[in-house]
Length: 245
Ligand code: ZN
Image (cartoon, rainbow, N blue to C red; front, side):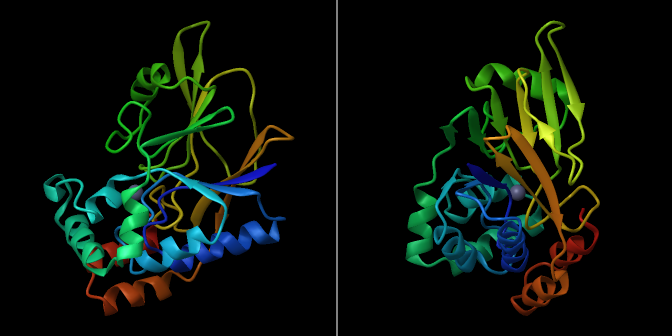
């Protein structure tokens, strides 16, 4: 079976569509595993939820999904993210709200735990260091954990013999063979990459080969930016898409 691992779509329909067509060209998948933040920042929250729901999928809640629902206070957001969250809240349909309302914090499927930020703090915590990653290995029972939130592709590996944690890159097109060691894997962000590469980022897990493939997909960034400007979303959020920061 093949599964697409998508994180941080962030209302970027153009990027999401490009990723879906890339998945199609690579032979498709049985199911999408979505790691939260379907909405927030971008111009097409309702359309992204609608499109995701057309596919067999699992999805956990992200901080921006919660913010759009009023489930968390945006005072911890930077002003532009907060403005986008309020804009998103105003544009959600009752159906879209109902979908976001029911997203779980974590899910377990096969050998994987799915969480937006981290298994320890699914909504808020960023796994951006081996120190934070190492602490999180005791918060999930499966061999592997998939997270988003930082929008930066990465693999954290727990070494039981030395009780240490290593950080690896997840280079595009280079397969990650899953072995005995426990891993926390971030596929990067679909709708707002932040590793300096503006192309959409996602992964495919092939359970037969026991391999994760990481892909980068170019999309029409200017189309998303035009929509954001038309809706009056903060210009800095539109600009950052050009740089992948
Ligand atoms: Zn995000």
